[in-house]
Length: 383
Image 1 (cartoon, one colour):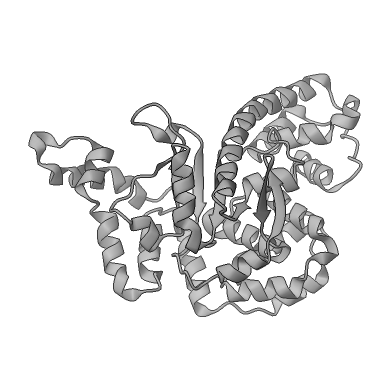
Image 2: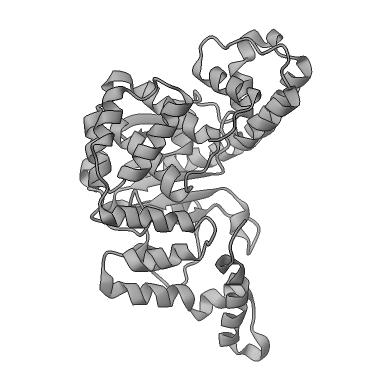
């Protein structure tokens, strides 16, 4: 996080302090507003300044208010879908852990969806209950994402996307559910990586959108938040991600056992993103991460395999196509690796015709040429 502007430093102070510090007399309000939008904190900042809003210019407050109202209208509609999904799973007696955004809306943002944009909901169910979960969501009319080959997601990934019904032929234009049966999917899904029985045993109750569900245990939450940010979002510099990690640490307080968190990071092979995430949070808000935590993590040495994964994963920021190659190289069952690659590169006829349309003269293998041409930008360096 290299931004050293006065607006950025003031924003850091506001996110850390209660009560909020007074704004500087020479504040550049346009710069601060742009910064808040870029870091996805505009609506949150509006909520933070509401108690003593007279200290901020009316025009600045109004811009924040309108941003939050628009985000809140969208969030309210999404919340209805979240409630439907969780209610259906509860009725089917499927225990579900709410991950990331919609869990944070409850635990960090006080249940106010206007403060945190969340365009989907990620739900984790036990692998033994996936069939029941899919059946419950199907009764709501949810449509599963198209697979390159039937059963691909169950065999090779940690989850699937389901869409609420939309206009015919275009389900992706609506709110989606990420239904997961595994916690970690990068570099590849390994069912043995996380013991799901123990993970569910450590969960905490959480009411989301008016429905009783579960959230991860405190140590699991911090480790997962850092890992998701580092692996999936490739250390995205958006400040709201750091803020949410810091908020989870503050929320857990002394109940968070850092020795357990360090052991979990080592067990799940997530030492690098956890250490990096906590170091960055500590640089932004000194004192957030206790010295005992930093010492526990500093003593961990990532295995060679983990270092390889993170070095390669970093390259995918500029070369997205390398992500597929990393998955093929690291899938735990080496006998399945060639089959994954073939199914990724050469999807089924049904998938090809759905994705790319009818082929000239009905000769559908020509669609592979169309597929490869569209994929070429993924092999170029991304600026």
